[in-house]
Image 1 (cartoon, rainbow, N blue to C red):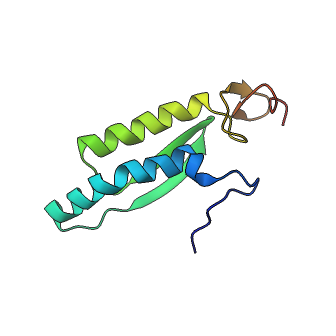
Image 2 (tube, one colour):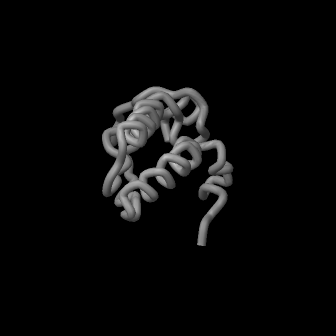
Length: 102
């Protein structure tokens, strides 16, 4: 089942991962048609305050889109999606000024 909102009720269609999926969809369709192999996102995680996306195969265009999303994730609050910066309390997280201490 596909969830359309995050636990804090932030719509996912505004988030980095959702936009990445929309951008990848036509590229993945083309890749699958050319290679006759199924594309898979193997893992999506946070590491050192940033997004990491692991896939089983990709073209230069797919890798560029993923890299852009990963870089953007270092500038966006993980809670609300507003501009943020990396903060290192106990864990490295990206937070806006409002959510800085959460």
